[in-house]
Image (cartoon, rainbow, N blue to C red):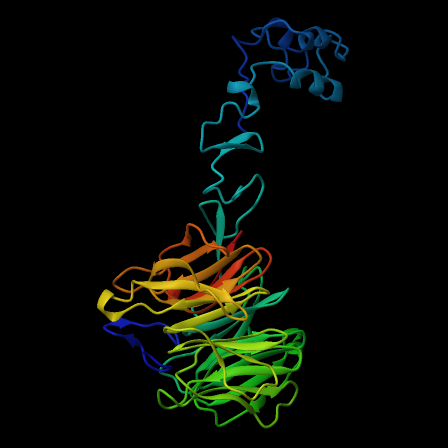
Length: 441
């Protein structure tokens, strides 16, 4: 298994610290008629159509306002109203019947809602990025230094830049949900970090782990308004802290430790931190962590575990296997399971189990290692790594199981996945290191 700072999984590269209008045909017939040549030398009047079939509109045009020479007053509003219903109709009636699948009728024209950025997934649904399969793919930020962890609130997307190979080049960043546009720039939450990885946010602060620095850090969200602030160290001298999660009172994180059995799961109070509380020790390389109102859950090299909050007893083993990423909702725990080296790690899986334990459900198979996973009210989302056996995709599946849907291909996901009500977010090595958003998810 690959730990932070390493970049290979078997013989294949591993990413991240853990690992990723239609116009009417309105020409007039013939040349100008005698009545078109006004005595004032005006341009020929083309408002009267002599080649159109008689209609009620034509009859009404005979009573349109005229000037002193008997010419139709084309500046009159009534004149335009009368002419509008007059002449050749668009092929198919102009009501969309002329649009052949997969085209749709939007704004008076036939468009492809699967690829048209002006009508992406629906009429007048604008896409500032690439419209693909009816979804809008937007690069929120590019040219980032090995982006890894990601989190989102109602206004911003937060991520960490590991800056692999630069001992103090890491950073914690933020960008508005709409991304960087018109020459704007992302906010630097914290610079000069050794190797920041996991990131989480609550109503007042953003939190992150620094793997090589061995610290758990936080910064007030007021820095997004331009207020100067120095990051607060909540815990130090930790053994390779990786992922983290926040509840109303504590920050929880995993430390992988220096050896296979030296990992731990810890917590520290919000605010200025304090002495870390060790919730579980002797863990086999714990990676991702999640928390709800009653328990803390984590993924490790020997499976998925849970521990009631405030309980100093032994963790529960919810499932066995090499778990790489974890997410929870009010019902279940979801995780990605590492495949085998013999099959190029292309036989990984996405699984779930009830929060209190029970029968494990396989949601998807044939996945090339899950770098990140997230869940909402209907679906589970994850990324696969671009290994020789395949991958580099963003995928989703219904929470209860079913056929997986590949949402985006050609990615190089590095870290976690985040979701909000409308979109799914992830980090990738694409475009030199990118933060991306897909809407609708």
